[in-house]
Image (cartoon, rainbow, N blue to C red; front, side, top):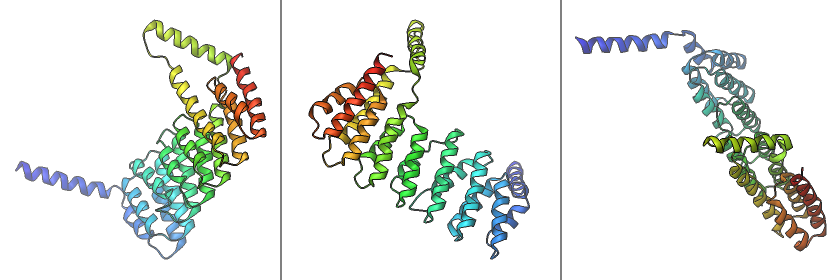
Length: 295
């Protein structure tokens, strides 16, 4: 008797689950309508429906819908489900990631909007967009690659440095993309906490040592962060195949990092680089770095 009751309970539970929203089946049919207006409204309605089945239907529709405006509406619906953390929001995020993938999505505008949604998801602590942005740097659209570099710059965490460094060194990228990546590597250090902030950070380190606990800010981790930036930038300057424009931007970015590890690199450029303009730029950058050391 007991196995029968368990089976009956499972059967009823499944029936109730699908009966929670009787309109879902209708919306699924409307997504296949020949009327664009009906398909659009179905996508909007599914984005407002708090059911995992909505995500499945929208995700499936992305593979069959051919109209760009409807595909963008489907993407907005997935974004709404993800940002409101409706049931199935993780699957909605995965679908957004697929829409940003050059191998899956042919329409550039859809990929661009999906990339922007991933950035917004990062701001809401929903996911780490860096792997998606790394993949987007291989997109066939320069517009999307440029948007990815700009988004990485806005994120500005140490985890973005290897991705930006790879783009800066990649000679298959256009000079525009490489320049923006070089500029972004230097810009990561622009969120400088200033003399007062550094005093607070040093006080935190001293207090943490006295208490025997890890400091909130690890000086060693910060040094590795700056060293990685400078390694990528100095590789640009030292490669004679790079244009003087790339070299000058790289030197400028080294100066913006304003870390003491830049001093020997800039000194070497001043003494040995074959390009006079680059040597002069290194001199200006070195003065900024030295000034930073005595603030």
